[in-house]
Structure formats: structure tokens, C-alpha cells
Image (cartoon, rainbow, N blue to C red; front, side, top):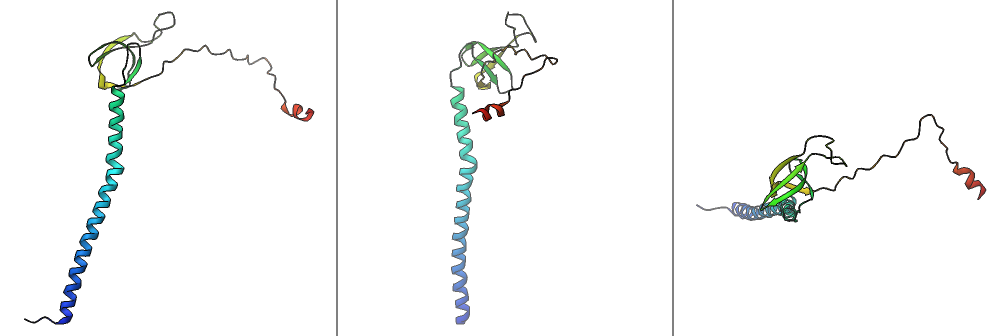
Length: 145
């Protein structure tokens, strides 16, 4: 069986395009894999590393913390990886202004972060609605200068 020169040229061209097509496909798949790594895996690894660093950040007795479930409390005692939190709110004089304080035990991994203590600030007295309020006129000062 003898093949014509035109058929041989067609087969040679098909082989070249197949090898070029497979290497192009391989390059595209490689680019997708690298992009997937930087878009998905790398940020997750950074979050996990930050979470590990936060867990070992050294909470101490008296720190106010928030758990991953949203419970806010003050650390009363630490026994290994178990933290006893006191939740609820007590007033300035030690009287209860709200819910009864409750002791809850959490494992260290359940502690999400430290929270800043809320300082009770006395609200300033609001002006009486019936008293006139003086309004400074800045335009007159500008004209005098």
C-alpha cells in the first residue's frame, strides 16, 4: 500500500499539531493549578497560621474574651487547655444589673479573641429642650479679621 505525498504531508501536520496541542493543554492546566494555589490554598494557609498564633497568644486570668460561639466573658481560671469564663454583667457597685453571672468552661480552641473592656461612661447632660441654644456666628469673625 503506497501513500501519496499529500497524505503523508497531512499525517505529518496532524502529528505536529497534536504534540503542540497537548503541550498547550499541559501549560494551560499548569497555569490553572498555580492560580488555584495562590487564590485558594495560600489564603487558607495564612488564615490557619494566624488562628494558630492567636490560640497560643497567652490568655491570662482576668482577660475579657469572646468565644467562637459569641459568648463574652472574663477568664476566672485556667486549667491546662480548659478556661473557666464568668459571663453576665455586674454593675459598678457589684450589684447585678442584668442576667445572673454564669461560669462556663471552654476549651482553648473555642476562645476566638480578646475583647477590649467596655468602660461605662456617664452620659453628658443633654440641654433642656426649652432653653435657647446659643449659636456662634463665624461669618462675623471672618469679616472683622
